[in-house]
Amino acid sequence: MRDMPMTEDDEIELTPEQKRRRRNRNIAIALALGGLVVLFYLITIVRIGGNVAERSF
View 1: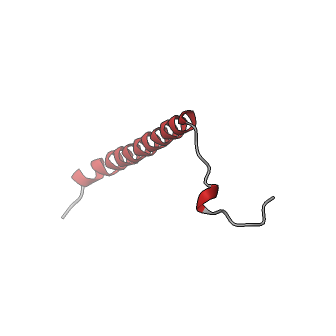
View 2: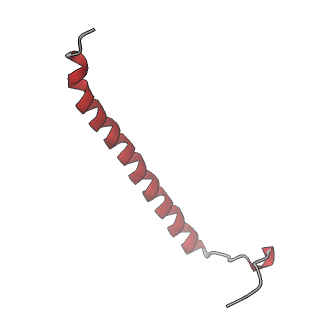
View 3: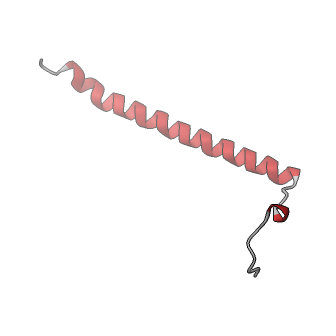
């Protein structure tokens, strides 16, 4: 192992294939996260939706 800290000259250069895979993975994670947000929102609306009409003021 190296005991010296990394400098700007020591940066790892990704190949175009690695960059493409990282981008695709990031897009997949973003879509999954967005899907969960929509799912939680819809579940909340369905659970609360019926009760809002029956509330008394």
